[in-house]
Length: 306
Image (cartoon, rainbow, N blue to C red; front, side, top):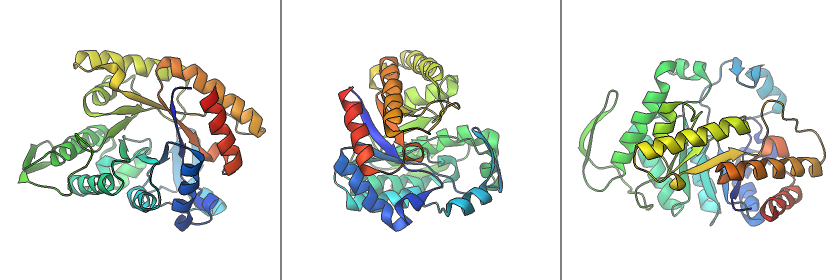
């Protein structure tokens, strides 16, 4: 199958690795298996009661029951970069609007340098409205603030002195170091429902690729890919240069129960349906598939052979 395959670390269950300190060594094993990248998402604050798209839940109960912690995504990627040589890293997603633009630009470019171009900055507005509000960011502004933050970062990644005059961010004649080693700056991927014209525009004009929601079904992905194609044509970009990344889960009716063979069969079926729609990258979410390295290696071989 002509696609790349990565693993997505579970958000609330780092107990799969024993402790946060063990995650970089675990990613070394993923690299040995042949996975192309590792994805980690970000939440900064949790309300006790969460209104998750997959269903409301009590975070404190979930955290206690699962004995979980949550690391800082970019710090963890620094540790992973130091332990690995080939596997790429992508944030999926980072809440860019909640980060100080200059600090984010420098952290991302530093990761780009120390990983020799293996870091990809996946951003989006996320689903947790309360999280933004608790940080003093109006929820209705989070998408626009994310866009402005990325525009400012891209300006700071450009050679020489840079200036920017936005709604929330302004600077003049500054340099932010280190400069990225990746030509054009740190690759940015945009998350969200690209059926939305603003999201499709951001993908077409600011991003290397699009990150589908983990629960996105085939119809949503197909419609989003078409919306991105239309936006690319409008803004003069070749749609084939846009990467499309989807998760190897189903929609809300996904049931992770079953044998390894059942999960593998469903993963291959989903990937086989989505590649013709334009999907170029797939995530294997460990929260669904578990951490059995032999099983993950067999799954990867089956996907590549399909």
